[in-house]
Image (cartoon, rainbow, N blue to C red; front, top):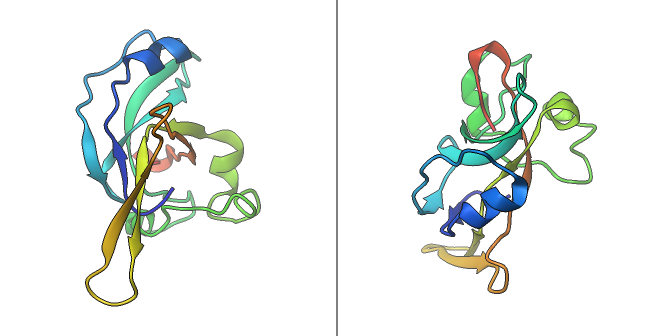
Length: 141
């Protein structure tokens, strides 16, 4: 994932595809940023069924003293996520699917930076694997 992304599509077909029994009302969002709520698909720890929930974007490791570290831990590299102390436990045990259909990158090295949108013209879906942390009363992506 990048530092900003979108979720514009109708999620009803995704709910059917993934076998979700309940899909909460979700409006389109065009500029989802770190520390905001993100719609995710996860396995409910009690019922073991898939569910759609909103999680706060930013991982807070169990050993972190300050929850604001979650505003900085928003991305992990696929090549190293399994070995990084910040992401290792969540990657192994607490994965989820962040619902996204586009993301932004910025063009230019000076000011102003211009956003460029990347999205799927064919399928309408670009979902992203994410790790989540539910420790210490924090439910975060």
